[in-house]
Amino acid sequence: MASTKRKKIMKKTIVVLGATGKVGGKIADLLIKEGHYVKLIARSEDLEKRFGGTRAELLAGDITDVDLLTAAFQGAHSAFILLPPNFTAVNYREFQREVGDATIEAIKRSGIQYVVNLSSTGAQLHEGNGIIAGLAEQEVKLNQLKDVNVMHLRSAYFLDNALLNINLIKKMGINGTTADTDHQIPMVATSDVAVVAAKELANLDFEGKVVRPILGDRNYSFNEITGIIGRSIGKLDLQLVQFPVEQAKAGMISQGISENVAEDIVNMETSLKNGIMNYQRRTAWNSSPTSAELFAENVFAPAYRAA
Image 1 (cartoon, rainbow, N blue to C red):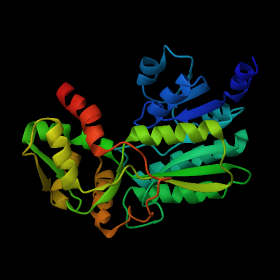
Image 2: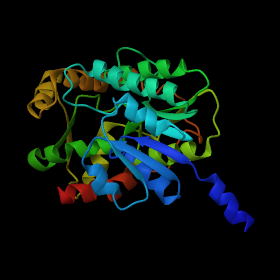
Image 3: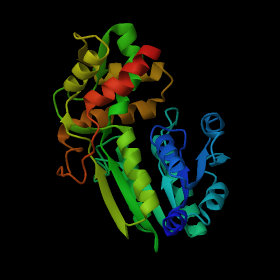
């Protein structure tokens, strides 16, 4: 009986922003499974479709809505926050500031004391790193909050980004990037990021302002990743093409990505060769288990076949 009572006391009220995203959705799944009371916020119509049959409280709305966020944060033990992608933003940094400032204002109004913030490796720099610069700026703003414990999850480059090239591989028979093809960087599966985030949100055993890198199992080059995903789909001769910057930008814009966002993405990719994501020394604490081979077999290949 004592054990059961102790478990009930340990359950937390946790808010997850971006609950239909690549990381937020996985965090929500884990927390719901563990029996926590979870408030999920997303603008996407997929919120009801994905979580409608669960015990989670669903709050459909814009994460720039300070009143919505404040109401969600009030009484919660912790919250997962992020600056979500917006590929059509005319000015991506201004979009990031709008979302970030709304979140910070809601944190202040609500009195919530534990926040886990999704950031990125490379966020130690405030310029020369493309879309990551806005995450660095948000870290600094969050660090100014008084009496709020903040953990910045500096995630490595997502292995899941390979999924964005499925159409390119299917239609053109090649993989592509503007990044240096042989430079190795830490890469991580979003499922590993979610495991770390869910644990921190539930345990609340961090104090002050903390940086927690999540670096995956090892470093990979884009050439290595291309070979791994190629083998997982039976394309042993899959080649990686390093696109010229202007060609890559034009290709993204043709797919509906704004010129400003395309510029930021390219700037991030081309800056990788300067070691911006290799800043943190790898340890057992900041490494995570999922290899690119496992990701390719269990995530990429099924998605490729289904596309």
